[in-house]
Amino acid sequence: MTRLLALSRNRWARRAFLVLALAAAAWATASRWDEVRDAWSALPPLTVLAAFAVSLAYVLATMVSWRAVLSDLGSTVPLGSAARMFFLSQLGKYLPGGVWNLVAAAEIGADLAIPRRRSVTVMAVALLVSIVTGLLVAVVAVLAGPDDVRDTYGPAMLTLPLLVVLLLPPVTNRLLGLVLRLLSRPPLDHPLSATGVAGASAWALLAWLLAGLHTWLLATALGAEATPATAALATGAYALAWAVGLLVVVVPAGLGVREAVLGLVLADQLDGGAVVVAVLASRVLMTAADLTLGLAAARRRR
Image (cartoon, rainbow, N blue to C red; front, side):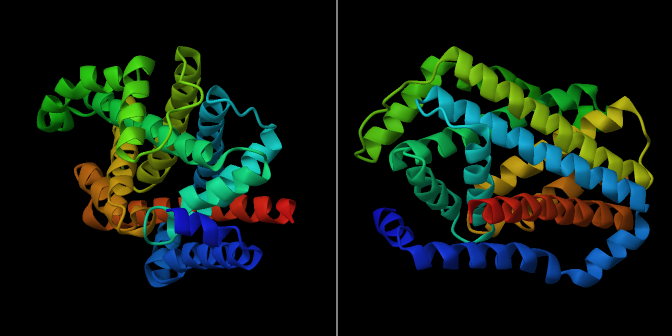
């Protein structure tokens, strides 16, 4: 990680990173263009536009959740600067390896007088909040989802108390302290507070609701029932798929893994062809949202 940080301080290395990240995100869509084209032809244009708008809102809510952690750990940054830092760093997740968004956040944060170690810690904590709240949403969605889903995944409710405990600041601070000691790194300058975790979690939960709306729009346009149970299932399915995809760091942005999990959960609500269209359309729209906001941030940063 130290060598990566040293390399990323070079101006040309930063430009190369941005070009590679943008190219990787574009390739994630272009490499499956035939399937993408089929997905668009099966969806009403207004549904596509609505789902894309919700995708943008989802990424924005995720950014605000991350910024709440950043402020809580001691770096209060104006919203515009924080947005540019987050949106640019997120392009790194499309590169294989699972660390490039952390490296990018560290270097862009350094330009804003944020210690590199704090930028990396903030990104890690924000990801932890997203994972825990996402799994929490997925578990709760089991109760509100269709009967067949509840019967199949009902035992997952047993994990609910553990997920809630992981978001308690004393527990989170101890976990972070343990990880930093194992990495032979100094402890946190500012421990997480209950207010900071609550704020970050609230915005993360809003982000998952928006992701669920995005998935629900696509699924119902392809034949799923437009019911509250389907909405709950769509929200839980996307949150679970995102969490699993994130944990598989060997593929960029969970490519393939997220689609497999999302398709598996939606399989009972849609026929085979519709499931493929839904998961591909979701991936393309979310990637387009990242690219749109990342390009806007890059242009503003220049």
